[in-house]
Amino acid sequence: MNATLALAPTPSTLPLPRGRAVAFGRRPLVMAVLNLTPDSFSDGGRFSGTDEAVEAGLAAVAAGAELLDLGAESTRPGGGVYGAGAAEVAVDEELRRLLPVLEKLRGLTDLPISVDTRKAAVARAALELGADLINDVSALADPAMGELVARAGVPIVLMHSRGTLESMQLAPNFDDPVDEVADELAAIDQRALDAGIAPHQILLDPGIGFGKRLGDNLALLAGLDRLRALGRPLLVGASRKAFIGAITGAPAAERLPGSLAAVAWAATLGAAIVRVHDVAATRAFLDVWTAIGDHRPWT
Ligand code: HH2
Image 1 (spheres, rainbow, N blue to C red):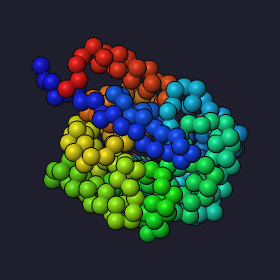
Image 2: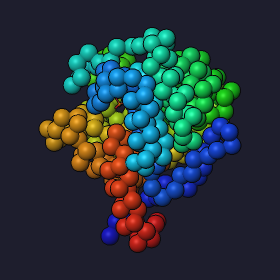
Image 3: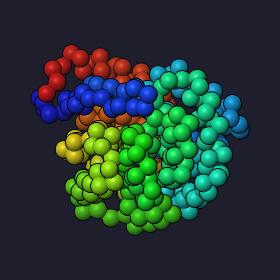
């Protein structure tokens, strides 16, 4: 028997604004993706207006989401299966897509709301409207982001990627993806600390699909427990991504089975949060995964 497989996340809490907190337990929390974009790879252009997007957010809550992640700029990587990659969105346009939905949802749910943005100006406006945390796939590329988040005292997800969004899938190259991503995440973590962000407000993410080949993505999912040595809660976003299509041949909308396989490994190896499109299925999957795990002593 391989006892090392049963690695629960370290129970801890993540303080949020207004005295609230997220509690991490034995299984990863489910973060629902809400893309307010016309061009996301998996579900772009789903919502024609604010009300529809708000309804989708509430449906995710009803389906068992534990956090919502609102993104108004696609981060679809360029140079690989997605062609040219997502076009950068101006601050005004990102705010125009995001703020009305955020404002309405904030009035309707107390669930933690994360905002997926690379721009400090967008993060600032979102935090003023009641967002709880920032999800920055560029890991503080905007020089104003670190100080903003440090001053606001909110959590931030910092994701690993290499190269620019426009070209990152052109020539990804790792010798040892887990070691190299761990080293680069450690450097990102240090940059966040240098910017004044409190250690307990930092979450790290291996950035599945961002500047990585198929084997790199698989190695990172299989080696996730090694990233736990960084000492931060880990977020994993593998839902519907191209590596699943590369294995199964399924188009993005039909990648749920493969997405659940990734959730299984993320859960088993100690992820704190999984970022997913299919909330109800992921909750059901994790509820059964947890029930089975409750009958096995954690090591
Ligand atoms: N992946 C995407 C977007 N944001 N954030 C984190 N922390 N981790 C991820 O893996 C991640 C992310 C890409 O997925 P999606 O939001 O579905 O597509 P798009 O960026 O095209 O909107």
